Image 1 (cartoon, rainbow, N blue to C red):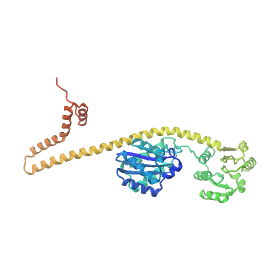
Image 2 (cartoon, rainbow, N blue to C red; image 1 turned 90 degrees about the vertical axis):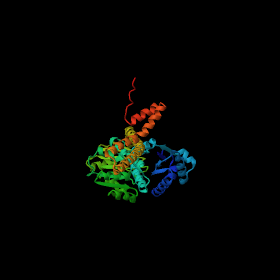
Image 3 (tube, one colour; image 1 turned 90 degrees about the horizontal axis):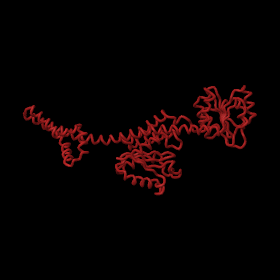
Image 4 (cartoon, helix red, strand yellow; image 1 turned 180 degrees about the vertical axis):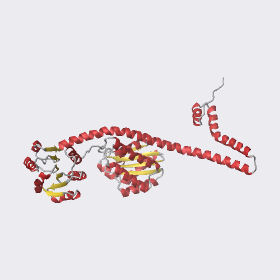
Length: 423
């Protein structure tokens, strides 16, 4: 039995190729059942995201991998060139390492991203529902999930955000211990503002105002976070009430000038304002930074922080890899023990068969009226003879050929020492 992974990801294939090989939930179920019906395939699992599509398989013969990759090629309409240039194939311990790295976010486009673990678990549930997960893949993915949890608990792999909007909001912690009595003015209606608004709501901020050129777009975000939508004309009046201002609008002219902020500060009795300008070109006049009680961050400041956060994650990835390495060894040792287990079971079954035969023979003798003491004595002789028969044959053969390795192995298995030769 061999563990195999066949796949493509963002490191090996372009988006065009990844789109071709991607599978949705319905197709995944069909492919899983088709794979399991193939000869030599015992277990199957598919992980398909925007950045990767991978098959994890338990198969009887590694040489069958070529048949599987050819089938996948035909099924998804790919060319041999697509396969040769973009696909990777791993086996056994390399599969285990890869699966654990994927689950931990160590193989992601952004190191330490957590979304992949949820996607991994969803795919596992789909394969379980399809009935294509057996003991080997089940054990592997349980290792993957527990390792991901341990990595997130024991390292800083996900401690610092790498999203512009997330970092912009996280910086509020440096200025305000509690946002429940603070107001935020967010300018724009794109994805960055949407994420910032949701993060501020999670921090239990008092009020959120969304200002945008198109009021309907502002209203969509405002409704999602129980905020209020404003036009840009209404925005200037709300600056005085804003403890936090985050702007991410495209345009050639700054939306907030130094004069507007000076006026707002007077009306606020100089209570500080935390401001973040994520616009390109800038939405807030650079002179605003000179004002007392204003803490203005620009896109450059935020990106510098993201770089520092990424460096922290890279350092954490080294620690995470040590955890992964130990888990790979644990899983592979478990697989080896499973192989030995089947041999042990076969041996014990053979011994049990000998015991039953000897016992039945003795019981028959007792029924015929034979002396119980003689029967028990003969039973012990028969058991000893039959159980020692095969090891004795092996030792005889090894002795005839002077096979010291085999002799020592048999002695080790039956836990006896070689007798000392008399001189």
